[in-house]
Image: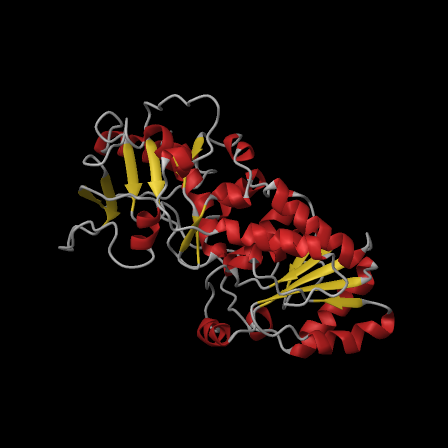
Length: 392
């Protein structure tokens, strides 16, 4: 990976952050940095879950949905580590915890295990909870398969008993009637005095995210030290000048996904630009834009926003050469870092003066929600520069 014109110190800092983020060692009380004051045990109960679906973008959507559910039934959410390359990354490595507490009561998994893992939720009394249809004969197996097994093993957690349930564990923070019903159902079936910790095999959330829960992202603020590294990168790349950020999905797996998506009215993260009730079908430019469309829309954004730089984030092909041929004669520089840590791309795209993303991608969806929370303009491939939510 090349860093033309970059301060090597910032590269080493980034490498340290990446290496420090990944661990599969079980959590031990003596190894955890916890708050100076021990938190009080929440008699209303706790929610745990494994963010075991897909990569970061999918996990982030489940995170927001889990917060909506925990708030709806008034239980503290135990913030799990993210899963990255089958390894656990504590949420505090990437995000600040205090801003999340402004939305709902939470505790990190590391702090929960350090403070309550023996006293309140000891081995021998740890239960798992699985959504299983009544007609199915399966047992609730919390650690069967990957990434579920490695996730809980990385935390040093085994389960002694499993509970099946069939009622909903998905909430929309804007639907008060649904939330009230959920709380009543869960209080009746799994009261906190008998089920103090409900550890779900999978996230209590939908994918794609319910529209009403997108607003929760405003409480996710990047880890200060990690963001400082991204800020250093931006300073060295853009020198305070305006830039357009674009996100491209060009991997072979994405080609197949787009082939499957065409003709559908909803696929993966597409509800972020196609309303749930829309009968409009996903089209080629929206999912896998031709090079000509990508270059043309990027050039239009550059001109409209007076940008001097274009920053590319991609999973495979960057099309840097095609963009340079079009933009460098106009005095616009094109940048593609391809960092090992995808969150670096997310942070930079979130700060762009204008952003163009892929509507079907949950990676784009994360950037779009953050930008919406900060009133920054965005659009999607296949849409005009002046795109607004709900426009087709």
